[in-house]
Length: 168
Ligand SMILES: [Zn+2]
Image 1 (cartoon, rainbow, N blue to C red):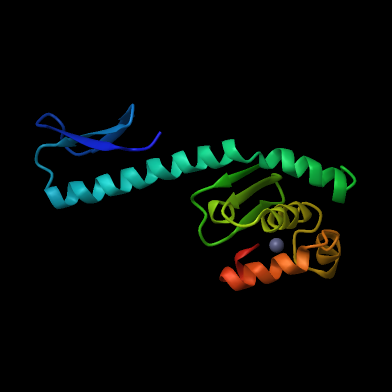
Image 2 (image 1 turned 180 degrees about the horizontal axis):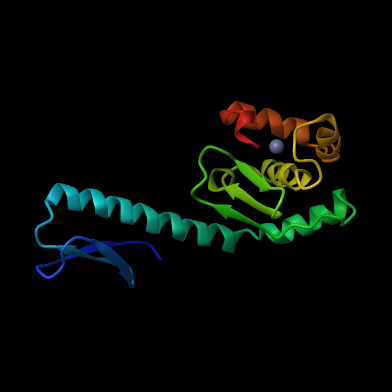
């Protein structure tokens, strides 16, 4: 569901807050009557961006089941010994392509990865899964990651598009 129209309802009763909700494909915005137009437009842009990020996240995770992929990799590269609690695409992580919480076992993959080739996406998942075994980027870590034959190529790809430092 995408936002196709925005309807603004100004109310004298409303004092401060601007709220928004989707009704079908229309974003209904309720705002105080006194709010300056420029301020309101700024708030609407933020609300719209937040809703779109949420929608994109839902779409990506529906389209590509990362948990299923991670299960396959667990079996193929990790002797099925990994315990991860969740793995999903997120749309609020722009500085890193992937992020693994070693303590909770949750893995977050940036939506920026979703448009990359499958073998690169796979690399990012395997990289983050390997952090469940080794949290840092030591030799032991790369020994695990390199079980994936295209690891080196994928690293090259990521360096080319925006820096390996982006993968933690
Ligand atoms: Zn890493």
